[in-house]
Length: 348
Image 1 (cartoon, rainbow, N blue to C red):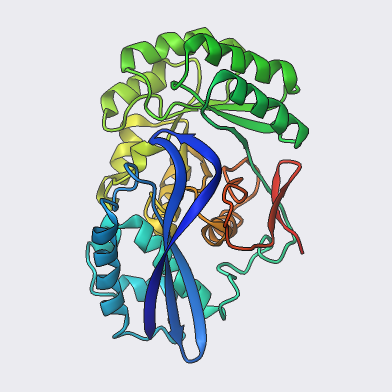
Image 2 (cartoon, rainbow, N blue to C red):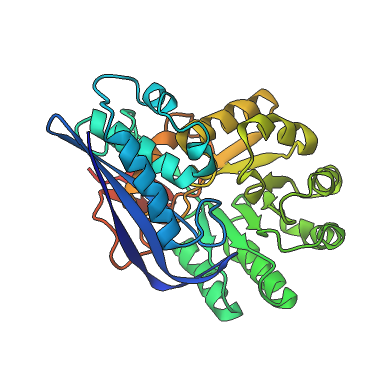
């Protein structure tokens, strides 16, 4: 197998506020595989200060070099992609590097299907179904966030997600009121706190905003506080979803975390939560415990987004996912993915 990678920097169309600061650019590495004339590509995408496998560029590329050396000695042939990965002499490497794990899975699936970005041959990949997605109100000042509310309404979204805990509380409440006055009452309204609250203040705040008919609040307190999060799940008038809480959790601790906290929802990002294999494992465990879930991208380019969308379509499309990130970049990779009337679809 011939193996290489290259580094790309994607430029945001406008500065984008996240839980880890304002982003103006996004780093990604693309893994290239070639075997018997077939080619495959996979995206290793990171978010600084959030991705558990990213410290700096030099360290990250050293990890990719290690993977390249291992892969150059192997041949995929007609083997099952996931069994092939499991047999690689990398006992802990991939679990400790979820973004690289996901990029490898993506590249091997693409290689096996002829380099057509047909990672999963399903109805979404063929353009036969659409995925309902949420519209996102990015962090910013009051006027910027209010403007986004009206833009999302015009674009036909029926599920809206808003970041909270970053601006003045009075303005935040005003934006929530704006959402409920602009959108029909049946609109699903999700909040994402990104660990902004202390355990003792979260409950008081949720009591104050529960009249806005909130669907859920993602990661209300910082991860790693299992006991406090479990108590919040029991007491909160608003359902709780886990996001950052799942990052870096070893396979052996997945079930223990869900049993300890038993959240209403979990949110999965393959680049952060163990790639395709890890995401499927989380889903299987969650569903066995009657915990619902949805999928979200971690600001991947259109290549990574397409793979996540195809993975999502392996399951019933009966919920809204966070996959509306394809239009973020000035220099995104061309794709036939488009968002229309609150759905991600393939414009075939």
